[in-house]
Amino acid sequence: MQRKLPLTDSAGKPFVFALPDVILKSLEEVSRDASGKITISEQVTNPATRDRYLINSLIEEAINSSQLEGASTSRKVAKEMIRTQRQPRDRDERMIYNNYQAMRMIGDLRKERLTPDMICEIHRIVTDGTLDDPSTSGRFQLPGEDRVSVWNGDLLLHTPPPAETLPERVQKLCDFANGELDDAYIPPVLRAITVHFMIGYDHPFEDGNGRTARALFYWSMLNQGYWLTEYVAISPILKNAPSKYAHSYLHSEDDENDLTYFHLYQLGVLQRSISQLHEYLSKKAEEVRELQRSIAGAQKLFNHRQIALLNHAMKNPGASVTAQSHMTSHNIVYETARQDLIALESYGLLDKTKSGRSFTWRPVEDLGQRLRGINNVGNTAVAE
Image (cartoon, rainbow, N blue to C red; front, side):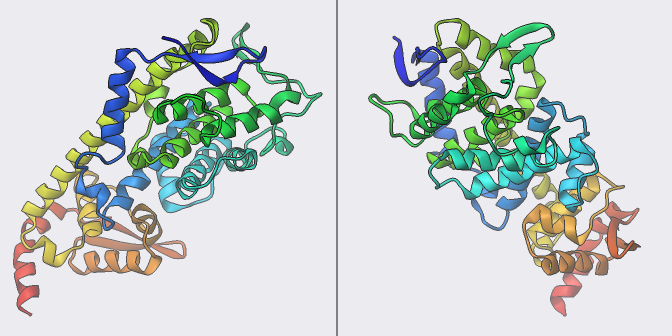
């Protein structure tokens, strides 16, 4: 059943993979669920609402991918930093902030061909301001430098190829990612997963290889038309079982370069991520419908961004929002965000306070009661 890949280990031996039934079934399901072949929730196909879900997934991926590499900042603090666009305060926050910027850039690069320069630029963004030696950001390790091996305590797990071979190896990986080395058919999803594996195997950078590998997986999936992948976060699942993630690498390398182990594990992670996305969208859709039912005339009074904000405020009474954070969450211009908040304030649903040179809005204490009585306000507004 073995099929050869046009990629090799340090000794020149090719990596191989197989297509057992379990992988064929998983590939069919991922292709169905991640490339828009079935009906997808309107929330991610409707331009008016999709940015909210996209930004949420980018934030989750950035936080968890960085935490996989040791960042210790909490999700709450990290989300507040990204949504308010404040500058990172320490190295851990900088890792998460950088990862978010890189994930946003990946979306813009989805139609570009992969090149060594692009890989280095992604790495530069991922590692900017987080490395002990800033000069190693955005470049491969050089001959003469100590190659960074992978260890588990005192146990050596992986020795990457010599630095002098990296330019040729990375160029070959780019050719593979761009579909230029194939003598036989390689399923697109397995191509993306293989790119993920090879960056980890070649370990071309002093640090940040894992974050760069996961970012390139997203690029490959988007480049090959799996558009829903942009809304999927794989790192939360990887972070919850880091030993399984590591073992999927080790089993592949130990057993005659058989990437079937890594393919199987990553396909399972991807399927769970897609399933969680659909559950999340279903839950959010029901929350919106619930709020709309409780606010007679909501469609006449509030836009979808304001409804989302009110729904969040109902669940988080102590939450605050600024025009900047509202703008970031919905990918709108600053003035549109400010007018959204001013309108809710005018209905008596938000209180405004000054915070430094800007304003902060918080839900009123009796928000639920005011929302239940909004029907009269809506009828009056419509009549006028």
